[in-house]
Image (tube, rainbow, N blue to C red; front, side, top):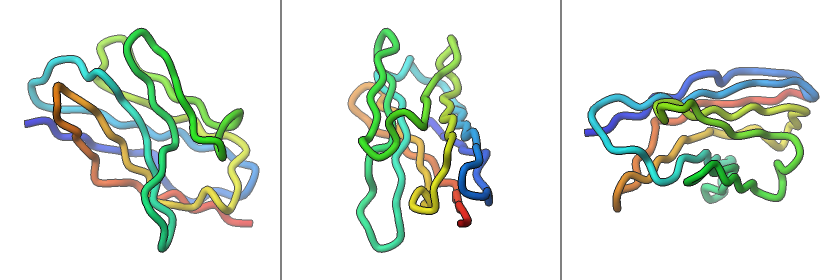
Length: 115
């Protein structure tokens, strides 16, 4: 069984930065995709960023140019560096790994950006 644990969320002022981490535990083959999603109040979960295969990245339109996804070589941890944060980035951020045909989710970490 794979467990994902996120960390790094918190309260930050607009224009500030945070880095989220998501570390996997348990025995598993390398994920084919690792990513971050977020859920804003009263809205559906949306894509933030993904990283797949040889390191190809994809970003949601609202975070392009401000957020950067990366992972360690062992594919045990995926990171999300968030710069130039805005109040509208306030959400619960979830990491997601695809391993085989199964999608695994972390428990979520709250990010709050004050104006």
